[in-house]
Image (cartoon, rainbow, N blue to C red; front, side, top):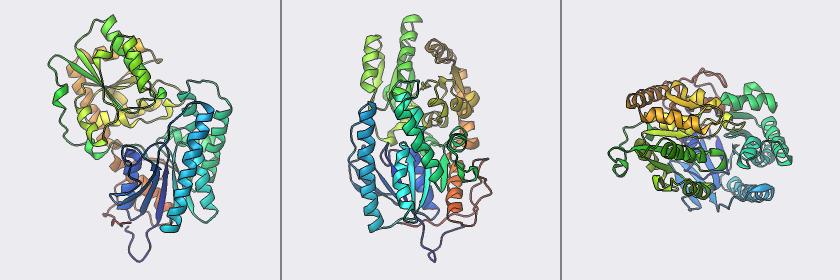
Length: 427
């Protein structure tokens, strides 16, 4: 089914607080898929590596507001989210007057962005709630806390409010969908699972970077955000064990990315005497990421098992898998569901166990190759964005009462690709 010129294309306003565009691969893929299926998309987000305030990329109209620093603690949360919500609301008013929109698509965290969508619901607009991360659990993980406190309960309130008010809900996996339904009271028939999927650039034949191809040296690598909750410090401690406990010097380490914990990470590396083994790139263009991963022999997903990480489907793991790379990680629920038998797992957040499975891969090149091939097969069998995009379109077609393009039911099964190529409608 194609949207024709006889009907004005539905207009979607996406609100994204915790990353910029096009830096956020999931939001970029969603927006492009919606445009290819005949919808119009405008995104409001903070500045990132690109500072231009208004751009159009692949038909996606993007308005950026100046990003702010990310202080810790309760007052830090008030400042970061208060500032961001104010900026998004002001720009959304401009978009409403200048271009108009029919639905507000909220990407979380934070869930309190739903307040903007709820305001526009009062004006007759629709509200789609796209849950990337569980904000209450993320707050505890970022602060190194285990016991719920006042902020946690406030975040739970906004989570429930968003889930109960949204016209349609999207989650990245079944774990998060169950939270929307069981913990927050959303209607199951309104909840869709649209998993993360690697960008198509990770599915091509990508050549490694020659400067990291040193004879006799394996490359241990990580790609992603460096925050407290991401557990990259576990990787540093693993490196120390490999070097000092097992006497290994046949490897180098590449850490691609940046974040609030990056400085502390390198301080830890210096304290443990392994800083000389590590190349930290900082933030790099997204287009450069595939070649870095192609340079890795063993990939790390060091996120420790906890209430937050057990609910997360990490895109870095699928990017590793798409490029036929073996992964070592902790046994979180979603790591196991995503990587299956193509990864080696450490139990109980035990860094010695993580070092043990890393050593196993370092000493067995055939195992590295076989796990890499299995990883790519798993991606092609259901983890690519081509498998996920029809679910997103089915959600929106249902929201606007359009004839279904697929036979997919919300939250279950793999969606079939539409029978015809949708017409692309520009903005």
